[in-house]
Image (cartoon, rainbow, N blue to C red):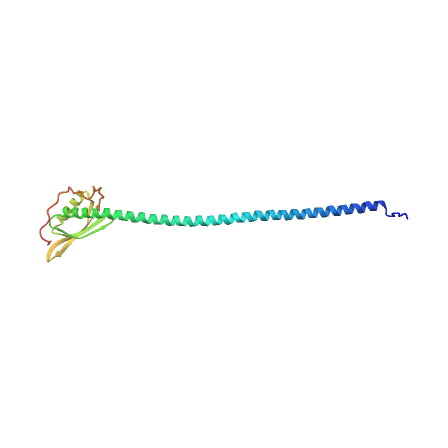
Length: 202
């Protein structure tokens, strides 16, 4: 029996092209999906690596911050130790200085003049006491100005007073201390030593 295809030849070609287009479209969609999945995978992998790097950097930064804190503490402790060292050195220097100051003060006191108080504030020394006459206060001021340990002696106040039922003059004066370069602790003053007054009454 002979079969005769009655469909037009053009319809067959159109159907073939349609199937071919559908197949190509399917392949393109599949390729696109695979490309998206591959790109997402690559991006996720890179993001994971970057997250690991960030975590490492944060960990190292935390260690550095801790080390910086320790360095600050060490610097503060070092500064405190240096301050203590300076204080100790100052106290050692002042200890020797005070001995020389008192030695000088005893040598410079004229007869008939007695000290009641000796107060030092910084480089300024405030003296108060009693004297038989105001001339001896002037002598003390000249002695202080002539000493290498003192300068700028000035009288603050002098007034009449009664000590042990005897008339006397009560005085207050200030003088500045000058810093000396000591040769150890054996330096001896070359200032002449006036004789001390006899007795304890003014």
